[in-house]
Amino acid sequence: YRGEIELPIGTLTVTTLVIGELIARFKGGLETATLTDPLCGVWNRRGFQLVLRRAAATAGRTGQPLSVVFIDLDGFKTINDRQGHAMGDQVLAEFARTLEAATRPQDSLARFGGDEFALLMPDTDVTEALSIGQRLREEITAVEWSVGAAEMLPGEHPEAFVARADELMLAEKQSRKRARSLSAESE
Image (cartoon, rainbow, N blue to C red; front, side, top):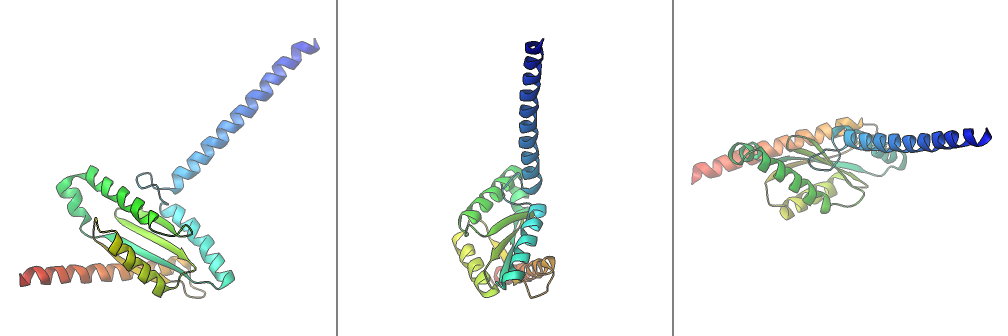
């Protein structure tokens, strides 16, 4: 009688362990899927918010600077309109891969949606962030892009300094657009 019970109990135990492992893998995959952008393979906005909160807490404790560069591709709508969304997707994915490869391992790149990206840079002040943004723009020339950089101020809410970087990027984008327009008019 004892041998008759050991086999089903052993089978049930192994089955439970296998199911538990499968659930854990599924849950890990699901968490990754909800935090990363499927097209570009970088953080999405939700994942970026988690990274931002951790980095802001660390910067607050250590007093080290924390900067963000907000990026928007110039003329991206034209790519989608003229060459199709498949080409637009390819441009976004390639841009993200190239940008991520050109940054430091401690930096975090996120796609906020559409053609907007944010690059979070721990231990980097705003002057250095602007310099890095300019260097990256000179290196990555497949598409034109505008940048805005901000450094988190003491006591500032993390989302507030990201919003400042976004506003600065928009101002630069408008300035670049006006300059191109004036240049086209003078030709």
